[in-house]
Image (cartoon, rainbow, N blue to C red):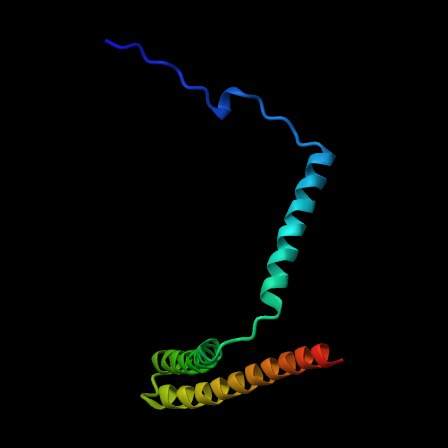
Length: 119
């Protein structure tokens, strides 16, 4: 029979607290990586697919939440389909407002980028 060899593990070594210089060096490496990543992604324009997905999800979330709240109102109050219908209408309005807000936000970001590039 073969004898089992023990494999050293991290548990065998006592852990020591990292020094201030080690933590500072780690923070500098993290900051450098973060800046390199942000520089790459900052100037990339959003694709039409990304914008459409955002608008669609904003609208769908509003309608879904409104319909869900209306359905819960139906269950609690027992008022038939009226809660669901009214909740869906409020959700439709909320979803539309969400899409308008998202479009304004994206337009302001794009105008700031164009002002930065021309000025």
